[in-house]
Image (tube, rainbow, N blue to C red; front, side, top):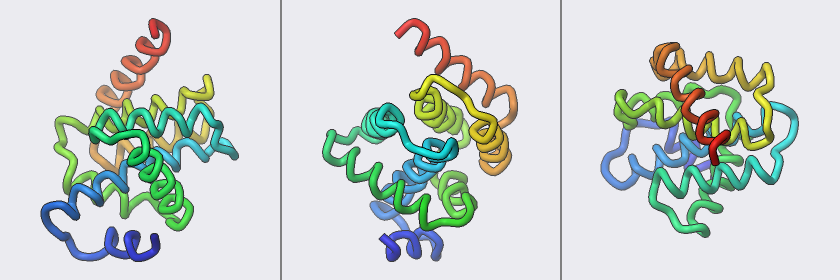
Length: 149
């Protein structure tokens, strides 16, 4: 795991490795959001598996492994910059609101938005250059899905 984290922080690789880095960066940001309130609820872990599987076309086993890798990477990292650098490099700007929806799905899995989670989303939006309007719309789309789902 530490090797993968070092690779994430090193020079830009190409091809298949970029895809793996992007997946790990997304998983680490989801894990960071889930653990901010002091513990990761089973519903949050399930939401992480679900949104990662949907976004990256993973089966259950692959999604569960990615969640574990993301949790380890988030725990080993002292800052989000390495992960957001990968997002900025490899995630199309016009699709970054989808990342916010994924994170809000995890945050709302325990039925609450804590102050620390709100602060994370604000900082994360600044780091990946997502305007406030796009962040708020992503949050509202998730809230609507959760109310109707």
